[in-house]
Length: 73
Image (cartoon, rainbow, N blue to C red; front, side, top):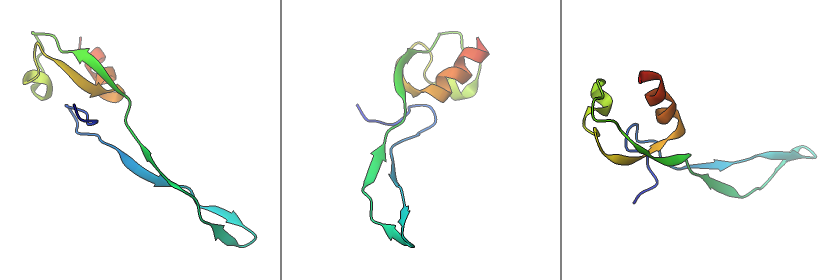
């Protein structure tokens, strides 16, 4: 089980915040951020091509794809 959305392929990213302190940048820790993945069941009678190959399956999808899927129903 990977931490990647099955539909759009959204994965983890590394972020580093740059804080300026007295004219110079203070070194800060880089952090890894993961997408909001949730288990969702794709219905059998889905019409959109992007979701067709996942019809009737239970997959890990990001919140954005789940929101898009709910608008199609």
